[in-house]
Amino acid sequence: MKTPPRPILWFLFLFNLVVAAAAPFIVDGPQGVMTGVGMGIVSLGAGVALLRGRTRPKRG
Image 1 (cartoon, rainbow, N blue to C red):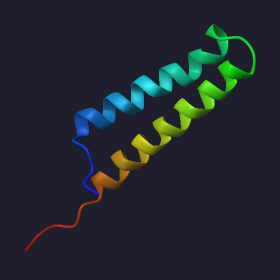
Image 2 (image 1 turned 135 degrees about the vertical axis):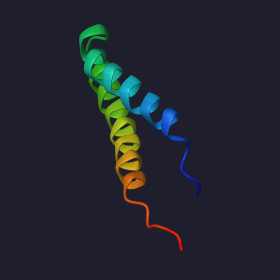
Image 3 (image 1 turned 120 degrees about the vertical axis):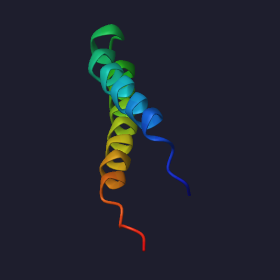
Image 4 (image 1 turned 90 degrees about the vertical axis):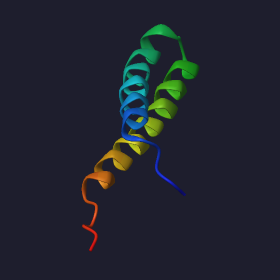
């Protein structure tokens, strides 16, 4: 599977990180906690993809 372009990964990482941090304070109860956890997982996935993209082998 092809990795999305870096600007999209940065957007996913930062936006989902902010939502994950704010969700438990905005939405009450277990729904806010689970929203934060889910968005945090997406943010971590984008962060891992950003880190993997830094160590590309050189061609040729």
